[in-house]
Structure formats: C-alpha cells, structure tokens
Length: 441
Image 1: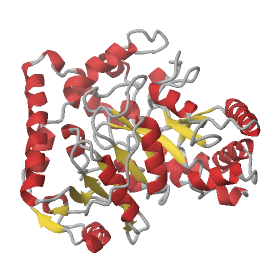
Image 2: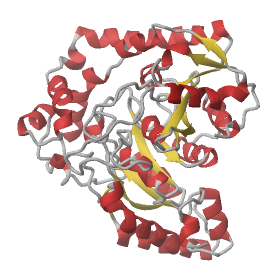
Image 3: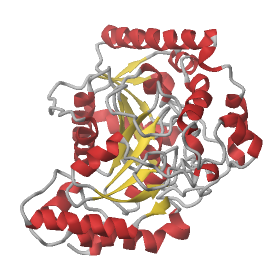
Image 4: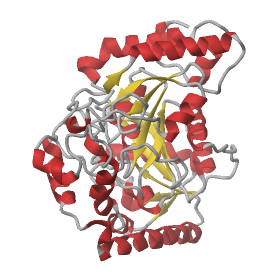
C-alpha cells in the first residue's frame, strides 16, 4: 500500500493490507503523520496535539503483536485521532480552551481504553469548539478549523477537527462527542458518516462535560462499514444487519423554504426509498424547550475541574472573568455562567419535557407508521468563519435520547457537502446502520 492509497482507504482496506504484509502499522502511522505535516498548517488547522514518537512506538508494538499472531482486535495497527475533550493518559485535555492547555490526563477515558484494546494506534488530538459550547469550531486555543472541502467555511462543531481529519485523509477514523449535534453537524459539513447512539450507549467517563444528560461520544468515518465497526467497538454492542423495510417519513418543517439546493439534494438522496411526507410543526420548539445544556454546563464543568490544579480557571464564572476565550463564546459563556443551574425548579421541568417529548415522538412514529424520520442535519449551508451557524436540526436526537445518523447526501454548487439525518427510536442503531448501508449518494 502506497501513501496515496492510504488517504482514502477504509479500515477494512487497511486491515487487509496489514494482514497481507503489504504495509506495516509503522508505515500507516508514518503516512498519518506525513499527511498532517503536509497539509494541516495552515490549510486545515485540525490538530491541537500530536504525539509522533508515542504513535510510532504503539505502531511498532502492533507490528510485533501481528508478527507473533497476536492481533488485539479489529483496529489493530489503525491510526486514530481523538477529540481534545477526551482524556488520554499523559496527554493534555484542553477542550479547545487556552485556560486548560496544561491539564494533563492521569488516566484514559473509558472509550480510549476500548480503542486501545481493539488495537488502535493513537496519533494525537483534534481541534474543537471551545468547551464544546457551539457548532462553528471557534477556539481560544487553536482559532478556527477549516472545512475540508471549502477553505474559510465552517467545518461544523464542536467535533470540528475530528471530522476534518478524516475527510482530509489524516486517519480513517476519529472520535468526537455530541451534545446537541457535535458529531453529526461536522459529519454533514465534511461529507462523512457520523452516529449519535441512544443515550447511555457509550460511556462518557473521562470526557470534559458540557451536559451530562446529553453528552455522548461518537465516531466519524468515511464509510458506513467503518462507522458500524467503530460504533460496535465504542459501545461493546453488536448490531445485526437489519432487513427491515425502511419506512421513512420526511419531516416537512425540517427544511428551510429558501434553501432549494439543500432541500433538493436531501430529497433526491431519499427518493429510492419511497418516503412519505409527515408534518410535526411543533417539534423544533419542543426540542428547544427540552434542551438541558444551560442548566448543567457550569456545574458539570466546575465538578470536572475541581481536582485539576493545572487548570487556570476552575469554574465557568472564572473563565468569563479571565476574558481568555474566543470572542464568539462571549454570549454563551456569560449567560450560562449566570444560569440558576440544576438546583432550580426549572431543571426538573426540563427533565420532564425530555421524557414527554420522547413519548410523543414514539407515538408520532406509530401514528404515521414510520421507523425513521428524515431531514437535513442542518437546514443552512456552512457559514464563513466569524459568522454564527443557524438551522441545525440535530437537537431533536440529543434531547430525546434517540439515536440519529448523519449520511452524506451530496454537494452544493459551491462544493460544500450536504448531510441527511435519519432519526430512529431508542435502541434502533441496527436500523440506522443498516439504512446507511443502503444509501448510494
């Protein structure tokens, strides 16, 4: 396998090459490091921390295991990148904040342990929207990451660097986290597959929290097959390939009337599945009213940083007082630092709204005889750097705890990727992953 082949190879392609001894794990790690060195600066700006020596040592250990017939798992020798809010022992966990760049993890996050057991070679960490509190990729630590397809445009967030790293050929798999769309939006904006699993399906242990209720890590990959494999590794579950008919409802209100390109592209991607039009006009408002992030952010961050003496600020209020954050975070940080939080009466009300909305969603699926709800991941095109992104539909999955997948649907005339989201009921990742297998976009 040559360097050029590596840039677009699937995990299966790489595993076959490793098995056939046409490439070594050290060569794959070297390819990943070469690609990052060639294009990350200044074109993409997707990497915050790179650990080349550790990566090469891990690759050598992988090659030694393979030489002795001791393949650890399905990611043996595969280069992987990790979002910078996920703990990797001995590495910084800066979460996109200049104030946290000296916070060094003492242990691996639970998902990192799973990746290592599967044989993954960890290369480094990816840029992200500061403290995961947004979807444009703004960061006081690293600035903006660039969209992998159109320079100067948003890559989505908060898992900005993870998405760009996969799309730009650094690695075949990167891990992000999703609290209100932070895996699926970057997947949509960079022509990737991304999955948010059912609430609680993957451990959040060792992840800088934004909202413990809504946080969940997730994979970003170039193919449905790679997404399935990564999802099974991260969750410890096996997902059967479902042959259940896809009964897709197109959520009419999930489209912006003045975005013809996005609307046509998403509908064209669905055309072969004979979808039906369904109306749920109050769904966006109900999802917004059930968003619990504001209640949980400040308290969860303070609890996480309580035993992190390296952090230059230990609470969100201290972050605000320092003024050392990206200007785009001014409103959200200030507002949430002053929020009454989980001790307020409103917190229990929002928790109840989440439970009620999921029940209503399940009843809606039954009433319309659908098993998937379809719409654009984001109703608007990726904005230019410095602008605020509007039009996300990704909150519905986050507040209901239902799983959702982002599938590449095509491109705009400007060359910007467009993502289709499919939402299923809880526990139906098998249906989402099987649906992804059937899309040819």
